[in-house]
Length: 305
Image (cartoon, rainbow, N blue to C red; front, side, top):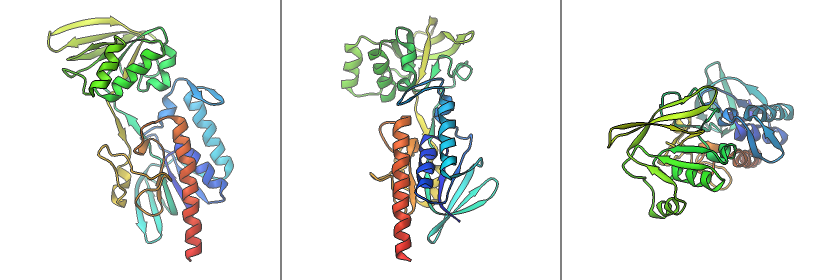
């Protein structure tokens, strides 16, 4: 019997596990490579206070701290969570565990665009997060591939930090509000519509892309230093469906200001939650709050019984 089971071992999950254990709660966290923590894919971290280095290095430090605090870690994929009266059964590919409270920190993953060469150059010019990696491309030529709000926000951020940025959209026009179009035009950011990226080319890093204009039927080769993919994100939240946890239209878990879901004893933190900003720092903050809320919930249960 565990007090708290944390599903996920990214920044949110590991922070939640560490704080939960520090509260004196018997805590277990589950780690998996599907989906893998986005932090582990970051080639370099420069926007986390007190740390600069490879994302995986920071993730390992977080894991060490969680274990040192007394949390127990399992490299097992959770496949189902069942509520049994006042407790939860967490079923993994290898076993079953009982916990009084659950913190879901399963994160999500950015959608891949399916471009030839995309996977090869991840971390070597291909990125899914301008806030995370944009600073490495100051003064360099980059493109953002996408048609929605996130693509525009990524392009605006890249422009404002000094990148030479263009937007490539597969749609006939950007699918955003006029005020965002105005911002793009004010900054004179080039937008290529009805265009797809067919291939990403390079030796050890991104050097060129091959684009195809669907309207003109023309294929062009462009020299670029970076390709930012902004075609959406998929939250890993199917696991809470049977519990009746509410999710928004995009599949993100709905939480209140204390990281509580609509199901008693179930909390959520990090990129799997319906929140506007998805950064390592905000994920850690969610984890702290989720652990505190789980602690309060368990203390109330003790009083009840």
